Image (cartoon, rainbow, N blue to C red; front, side, top):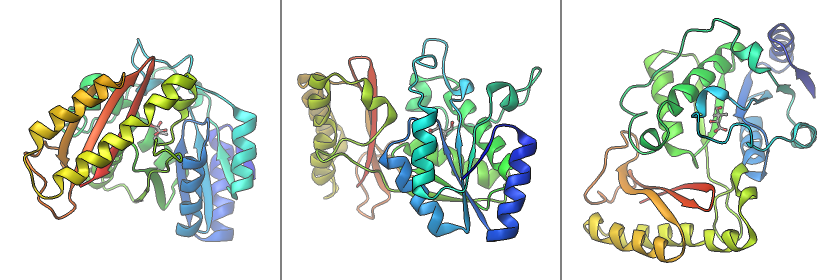
Length: 279
Ligand code: PAF
């Protein structure tokens, strides 16, 4: 596996991969890789001849009071995991390489960036869209793979690609879960053993709620009951909503064609857990 830490090396290595393998898939990550990320690498390997993974803890998507400095970092472990997963090239830009002094351009996906995570983390999706646009242009990848776990992020990236006619296909990867249903996340490592046990209530509540809403029952009372159940279990929901999967608009009931999605974020100690489920 080749490693690029500057743009000139990246472009040279990608050109060589393209000559050798024809097409290139990108898996953007912030490192601290877990089996969920590795499942995206496996999808990328099926989708293209060569795979590039980026590792960049993107300062632009963290708010001033957020956990940028304590975001988990394990470069040696990540590179070993990428090598084992069959990644061809790791792109590890420095913050200065990604945002040279004087950088003034950002990408804003209006509307889709505003609700849900956008309320909790103002500016977050501007940071995500900007870095993803740059990663797409830097690598020139044909396809990029994103986990469904961050559903709103996936919707924002899809809309950005459509609106800007970016020549890249977005491929979603299913959420990978622990044995008790908890969606894998780099931040799960910050849960204490007691919090980790309590966290299983989140996917269980989502499953039960989704089952109850599939018949088209009114969402509001069931969502209220589910939020109360989460609170009793020590989880503080920031939001729990039934939404249309593409527009992210709230729904009063599921239309029953699989287009609706339950979207949740809840706090447990210092960790925010995000999850979603098709209804
Ligand atoms: O999902 C993530 O890890 C990040 O938001 C991403 C897509 C790598 C952009 O920094």
